[in-house]
Length: 216
Picture (spheres, rainbow, N blue to C red):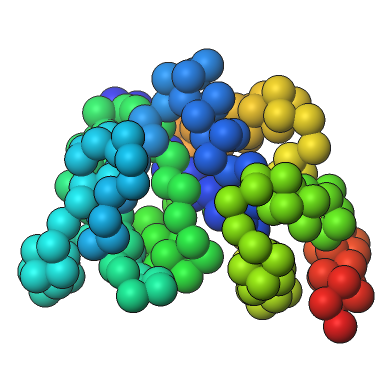
């Protein structure tokens, strides 16, 4: 029986550093990072097929109708989704694939790929999360407050994830994710024993409390 790749789904708060983390992980370990489709307008420097597949609303809705997406959602007036063909082809070739998507989409992926690992990336504290959003310098305080309030809602879904990865030191976080993926690959392609995870309840309750205290 040939080796099959494993699917890892990464979600997390806006400002958790997911993009930088994914970039470093793919550069260092050559994982396949799935390219999502979207109907939003490309930003300066973005290339079709690299950052996203940029589609018209009609093209995207045709993909929905043909069931060509693993998951999709509409966010701030635009569609976002993950094309199914790329992911299935990479896994069949024995390549490990990473999806960086929103929580709503992550839970949809679990329905189609029950064996997928769901990983939630978070800073160590709610205060650190807000500081990272401010340090970006790309949004006003009202927009940052909106993202923080959204984080309160997103934190309610953290218990549904298999792993919580605390993005404190970037290099350490990259190594931790790599080890999680390697361990999952070994498990799925050999013993297929139950997934071993830590008890994240205490940390989840702590960050939920911090978020609410900041935005009570």
